[in-house]
Structure formats: structure tokens, C-alpha cells
Amino acid sequence: MPTELKMPALSPTMEEGTLAKWLVKVGDVVKSGDLLAEIETDKATMEFEAVDEGTITQILVAEGSEGVKVGAPIAILAAEGEDTSAAPAPAPAAKAESPAPKQVEAAPAEQPAPASAPTPAPPATGGGETPPAPASPAVGKEADRIAASPLARRLAEAQGIDLSTVKGSGPNGRIVRADVETAPAASARVPAVTAAAPPPPSAKPAAAPVDTDIPHEVVKLSGMRKVIARRLTESKQQVPHIYLTVDIRLDALLKLRGELNAGLASRNIKLSVNDMLIKALALSLIEVPECNVSFAGDTLVKYSRTDISVAVSIPGGLITPIITGADTMAISAISKAMGDLAGRAKEGKLQPHEYQGGTASLSNMGMYGIKQFDAVINPPQAMIMAIGAGEARPYVVDGALVVATVMSATGSFDHRAIDGSDGARQMKAFKALVENPLGLVA
Image 1 (spheres, helix red, strand yellow):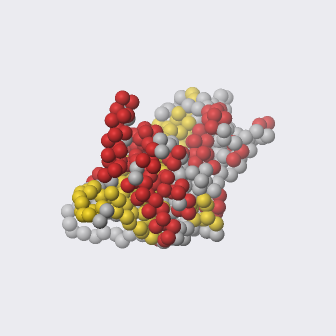
Image 2 (image 1 turned 45 degrees about the horizontal axis):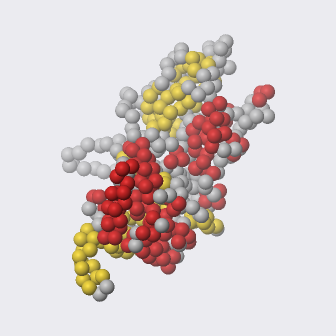
Image 3 (image 1 turned 180 degrees about the horizontal axis):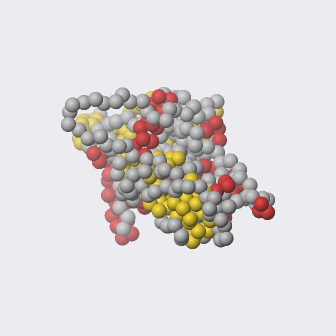
């Protein structure tokens, strides 16, 4: 009988999405791997691919429909010779509206400020996703094989992913491309983190209605803004934050940056201060591994690699692409990776594994002239570094008062996992690396 195509779960935290655009129409013949639709998740706009061959006989959800629940039928696919008379009639689309421009959705701070997630499991803003469950068995004579689309199989083989550990979101539990792309991020997390995650929060953050005579307009929240509101609230309610601030002299780092950029000019590479701070944060976490951790209830997850989530502002919100293994990368490599990730983040083209995960976060608001601020932790990460603007200040050097370029950096630490003394050691290590920056290139 005809197959119902259902709204897929394209990210670990997705509960509903917007069917932004159909890429097929009734009567089109599709094969496995063909793109069917563009779907806005709680983090990004992603493509939905076919996992079976057949003809699109019905479109059940119109373009621009919002709030379509994961698992809800959105179209009917019939194989050759199948009777479509028994196919279900189109269901009214959830919150169907006229097609709207594509909107990029993002997780708040999976980083900086996602919090442990509800049932599908937290990303962030991005980490702490629900461990993948074994894929549903294939039906019929293929029951002894794992059900997966050809494209998903090729991706899994190329990335060395065991399909038996991947949960399929396609029809009958079939594994599709999005499931494989999410798998690396999922496998990088430790099940204990999710097991100890707090109970799911209420679906909507509590807020009193606003009754005002002041001229105004009411703007509907995007999916991204809803996620930001929920996860920031979760983080502040469930994670006991401790804040530690240090003032850091930047003169030596700025001098080294100028010299490095002069040497890299022929390669069209221009390092930013932020690139160097990413490296400094990564190395400081290696030096003080007690801060490169995740709290997991009755266990503590200790990471041996530093994956730094970097806050990037995008239209309507925030997303945190990840520099994987930043402690072992050259600053020039960090710069190139950051430029690529930030550019694709603003275009809504990041893949889930590029913004889900991370062991710590960095948020820099210095470019806005902000002197100092306290950032919200992105669980299951246990720390985030908030960077203020570098500015000329009176500073004591070798007992003498001088004018130096100084910035304030504030570390937010999960006090359940990190003691104040360990946080202080990590801040001291970060300060030393920035003020003596040759250690960043050694």
C-alpha cells in the first residue's frame, strides 16, 4: 500500500518544524536520495530526502505550514502499480500560513546557552544528546539487514559509522542521511550525560501576558527564539553558576598578531584576536582538565580533547559552530575553520554535527564595546568564557603605572562539576597564555 512520508526529526531537539518549501509536486517520480522538501528545524533550514522510490500522489501539508509535529504525515508516496484509493485524505496543516521567506533556525548557545534538553535530548547551542538506539529492523525478506537509504549507507561507510548504533527517522525506522550526519555528534557524547539530564521542562517558558496602551506591534516568535528562551531559562534554573573575572593585558598578543599576519599575508590569511583567544581557551582547558568536563548526575565526564563552541550572531538569534580539537590546531587553521563555519552559519547551511557538541564555549562581545559580561553556560558543558573589549587602561607593570591595552574575561562555571579553585586555576592559565602568547604558537 502507499507509504506515508512523515515529518522527520532532523535534529536531536526537534519536536516540530516548518515545512518551508516543497521541492516536488504531485505526480513527480522520485527515487532514494532525491530531495523532497526544505524543512526549518529549531536550529537550521535542512533538506528532507526520499528513502524509497515511487510517485508523489498527495501533498498533505502545504508550504509555509508551521508547527508540524515530528512524525506527522506530510505526503503520500506510491510505488509502481500500487492502489492509491485507500490513501488517507490530506490532513489540515498545523498552523498553515502563506509561504514565508526561509528562516534560519538555531540553537542558542548549545552554546552559549543551551541547557540540558527534553526527551529528544539536548544538543548546543549544542552536547548531551540522547544515545542512539538500534535501528528498527527492515521488513519482509530484508529483515536481517539494517534499513538505510543508499545515500545514508555511503555516508556511514565514508565516516566509519556503525549503522547498528544509529536510530532511523525515516519510514519504518529507516536510516536516512540526516540520521548519519547527526551520528558523529551523538557518539561523541557519553550516555551518562543524558541519563542524568534533568526532567523535561514545560513546553513553553512561563511569561505573563502584556497588556499595554503603548503603541506597539506583536511579533510572533521564530522557532529559534523559542528554543533560546527555553534553554536559557533551563540553564539558569538548573545549573548553579559561579563567575570568575580576570583583567588581561593584550599588548603582547596584539604585537604577535601583527607579526603573524604580516607573515601570512601571502597566503591570504588574517588572524583575528578571537582566533587567538579560541586557541588560548583550548590550551588552558588542557592545562586544567578539571574544567574540561560535563556534570552527569552521579558521574563526571572528563574530556581529553577540547572542542570549542564559538557564539556567532545570525539573523534572529545565535548559533555556536564548533572548532573541533582546537588545542591541537594551528591558529591559522582555527582562523580558516572559523571563517568557513561563521559564513555558513549565517546562511543556515551548517550540518548538525558542526554545531552540536563542544566541551566549552567562548562568547566575544568586545566588538560591541562591551567591557565585561557574564555568559550563560551551555549544558552539558560546564564552562563558558565571556570576552569583553580591549581598551586603554591604567595598568601596573613591574611596579610602575603605565597605559596598557586591557580586556576583562569572565568564566562562568557549573559549580556542581567545577570547584572555584579549579575555575580560578583555569582563568589564571588563560590569562598567562594571552599575556605570553608565544605559548599559543609553540
